[in-house]
Length: 304
Image (cartoon, rainbow, N blue to C red):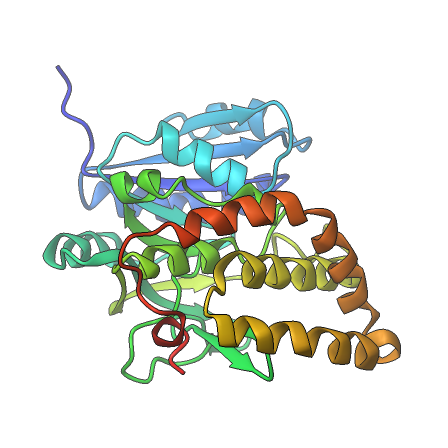
C-alpha cells in the first residue's frame, strides 16, 4: 500500500489558468522538499484549465467542479480530495518561497492547540504584510485589517496561504458556502476554531508572496466586490457575535450606519438587503455556534 503524503497543497481556482502557469512551478518545487502533493480544484472554469492543466502539469491532481460555487466550495472539495494529514490552502496568485512548507508543517505538529499556521505573506507591489490579521469592533460594527504582527497571534488565518490539520477543518465543516463567492470565509472558519479553544500560529520565517487582486479584480466590478464584502461581514456578525451586550450594540448601530451610508456608501445598503435575504440559514448557523460547549467568550476573541 502506498503511504499517503505528509502534506497536501490545495489550490482553488476559477478561470486562473494563467496564474496557475505562473505559480504552480514554485508549489511543485516546494513539495519536492518534502513528502507532499498538489491538488488543484477547478471551480467550473471556462478558460481551459480542465483541459490544459493535466497536460502541462501531469504531477498535479485535478479536481473538477461541474458548477461554479465560489471559494468556499472549491476549497472544501479540494480539501476533501487531499490525502495528506496537513492541508496547505494556497490561492492561485500566491508564490510559496523555499522552506515555507516544512516550517508550516513543523509548527502545526509542534503545537497541539494550533488550528492553523500561517506564513509571512507579503504583497510584492505594495510591500504590505498580510500575516498580522485583526478583527476590529468599533461602534457596533466589525471590520478586518492586516499588518505586521505585533506579538499577538493573528486573529484569523488568511485563506490565501494557511496550513491546517485536515481532521480539524473537516470537523468544523470546512468553509461556509454562505459567504460565496468570496470574502470572510477564512475569518469565519478561524473564529469558529478559536471559539472552540484553538489558536492561530504565525510562522514568521516561513515566507510567501501574494499578487493580491489578481483573482478577483479582473473579474468583478469594484461596486460588486464592495457589496459582497458588506453582505459577508453582516453574515459573519449575525452568525458569530453571541455576547448579548455586543449584539445590542450592533442592532443599535445598524439604523445609524444605514442612514449615514445611504448616500455616502450605497454598497452597505445593498449588502444589508442581501444579508437579510439569507437570514434563515444565518440563524441556523448561529444556533450551531450557540451550542458549542465551554466556548471562548466573544470579548476574548475580539480582544475587547
